[in-house]
Length: 504
Image (cartoon, rainbow, N blue to C red; front, side, top):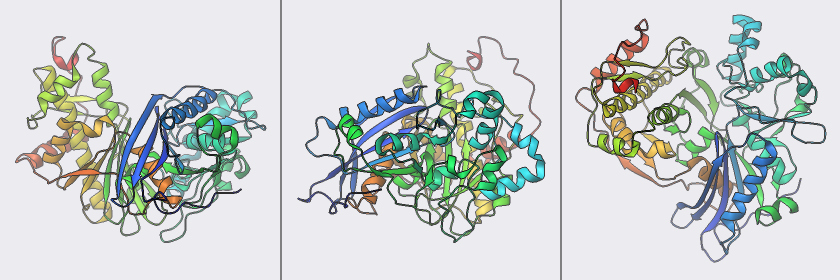
């Protein structure tokens, strides 16, 4: 594998440099990022977004087209490409490197059959070894299901590619991944605290589903490029053939890094389809306590520090609420909430059970209290999400033995929702900052690529606006009521009439 020599820091004349970032999730986002190294400012100069198609070939073509559209009006060629994604979706490749069938999506990929077969003791040992709770979304569980349900397709599997890995191989003809993505598969052994990250999947873990290391991508060392753009891909994207390509990492980890969350005690509230609370740990994380709370233990994208990662429904809940009220002007309702404090009613935000901080598959969305208007019910949804975020945060405090040094809110539209953020300012006991980027994962991938190729300072981060903590007088009372309701026996179904906005 050959790589181009890194450019001098910044443009040759001291001018800003640009880079490309790609983020593949439920939607795919492509960003052209400009980095002015002297001022330490990184700004999005163009964004393209589209629903991630089912067919890998369509995805690859759409990414190349989006890059070309973003760069067609630029007089400076981007210095690098960075790619981020979730790991819970992926693509089967045959012996010739061709995709076999559609994308294996995280929303329908796995079941708990593998974990049921292993039994509780082996399931717990697997979670402790990988730092990942035994959940059906894990690729290891998806591979087990594919063998059972699609044996003909499974027999054609020569290599597995995560979403970021697939775009990387399309651009460079090299199949590789990074440790944060590998760590989500449950086929990667998390190294002990203080040890370097491993650059190999684990044969013993893969053998649980009849796979081997040679079917998996190569794991890059932190900061190592996949390769450089091959001529055909470079021409299709409108980029120089010698442009280096980097796998930036797992989406939430990349967003946190881009927000400047890189050192002990720093935390990020990363909002996408799901919500993740990521805390960089100053001391080794108690894996048993973390996993018992439904949380993951991982490393930062740089590989040098352990992190504690908690997941919740977040943006999914808000998107579901908007979709279930198509006759309402959501923007008007959100603006009506901006200057108001929390009410007494809240929703327990569990569309499919609770992952953390007390895992339980039984709880479902439930309104606690009563709402009179549609606006009241929307406030109850946001209040429930905010109180659950606080519950995750206080559980992390207990596991780590300390409180975070502030919290950075990072994500798309949900992270810039003024009404939701106002509740966070009033109900969370920490100074907050909101990262300004529209697509922080894609922008973070672009920023990391610019840093790793030597074109930007390692200290540069996406810009943010800071806000002091301003606790509501009833913050602790509301939090106590939420935890009590969340951990009690589920109440009976609501008997509210059909004219109740909660049932609209």
